[in-house]
Image (cartoon, rainbow, N blue to C red):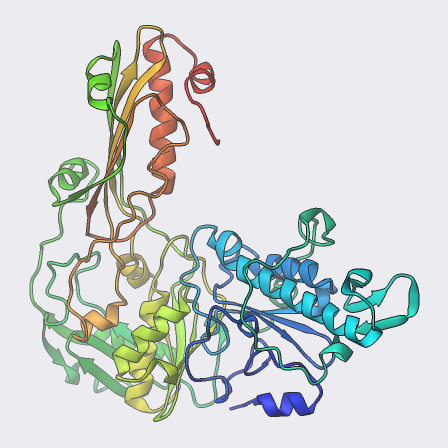
Length: 552
């Protein structure tokens, strides 16, 4: 296996500026041991920007590209803030040895949240390079400018130094300054302008991009057998449901390397993929019966969600709302039921793992690499620093899929065999066990006054959600099968419209995981036309006349 090590000392000796502990190309097969260690801090320039001896820029972000193009957009931000060519910027995304933990990649948080320290770090680097040039030119920094990787004095052609020259011998592991002066958006060359996505050429050429295509020397193939409780909630006996496994039922099959059974985790490792699939299909397993899943059919979902234990959480409660609701001239009371939805990734989740006594390497399509690192460490009884998540592209997750589960599957099977193992779920396993987009009960109470103005609005949203823990942790008994409430029902629950009297209540519960934002927008926009129809008023005038501070 290829290993590439660029130590801090070697890079300094080569004349480069050290801003991270290692600089490795994007698809390096193994992480540098020098890069492993403690978590990368969130408050250092070196966690986000590195400048090499030839002036090229490497930027680091803990999020991953889920098909939205952040590898391109973040490079645009860095190129503009540093005043370098876009083509000179390389992004490292979600690699647990080289990026800070900035949480899961969800919603629009990459640009809104995690790009901020990256931009600040780039601005600080440019500022520091200008200050170094000012010392070299014996001029005030205010007389210097930057462009295309150079610092120069516009009135003196000889006063010109490249970033690479200025950075030579400098060690810039410095605190991140959140108050650094940023460039104005109008001065940028790339942000807001069309730039070709950097990820497309490799995909068009068929180069290694997707985790499904990852291969390692001596790699074996694995498949898993799941309990017959797809969609199970916390009342299922996961972790202690398996009664027996008939090992003899696959003894006649060729290519079987190992059958791995740990409580309810069952995995088969074979020399070839089709051999593992055949063994998975033919293995005889006896499970405890369980039929405790609530009725989630469209006809019964309203009652199921209504009966679920909940905890009220008031998001907003204007004074006088109760009286205003009682006094409306035209009441509108509506219940909405949003059914469970598959996230339905186009391809089943896949991962590759290579586990040895010292290091755990995982190639995964996860959207949350740093938390996956912690889960794999817990699963194998290792320190998180021993686990390296190499994030590769995969099927779109659209919320959540089984990428973390299959990564843990691969880790267990590689640990059991001492060989690299590739595991891909079957399509029915992906569909059955992915954390679904959750069902939701939304109750709107409100109405209009005598002048056809919105007088009061109350919303209650019952939104069962939990973190959907990495499944093999539950199957192996490492963690208990319990549904810890995750407070997500408040996402976009407070509407975009401002009403005279408003009450919004999230009723937190725990069953499965999903995203509520689209439902919250739906009930707000649907209830308004109903109000309009009940008074013969068109929808648009009510939207225009009633709200103040509307941000749609």
